[in-house]
Image (tube, rainbow, N blue to C red; front, side):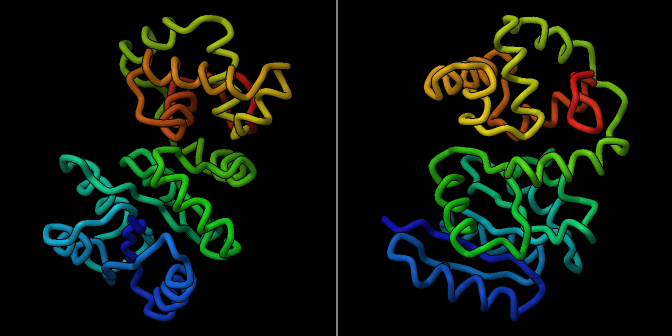
Length: 224
């Protein structure tokens, strides 16, 4: 069954470009489009969608709030934030709202398609280089700490799991973490899964958010 994609962007030309790229894929189908977050939420009430490509800056209802409302629904579609980065200071908020990842709007078509497939399969899409740049810029905007229970949850991690968590938070892929720690990718994947379970997190995007909010890592990507 083809991946059902919804395009949400107030720029018609951008939606047209994305639609053309996706339409050429045998495993993808654009089933809906919306010009703002409010329209997207309305359409989703009557349309089955697997992945939403969500712009951030839009009239009426922006992508962050739309993402939050969508992700609060039972069995929601995956949301992939599309950002211009240099102009957009809300991408991190989108991740906190429940998005499964973010990509730059000028991403090569192949990377966008791979991101859609990854998100659909349950993985989070956090491009390592983009993660580091985005978090370095936005981390001063984050709150200084989180409620005590979150810190206690982090304390449940083993030394190795904490090590893996810090590298995930710095934007490293499983392959890069495996190389850094001299482990197999399968072992790293297992550690990441245990981290998610112990911290009650949905995916590695939320690992990044938690690590920065608790001060485990600081701006610049180093350990706190």
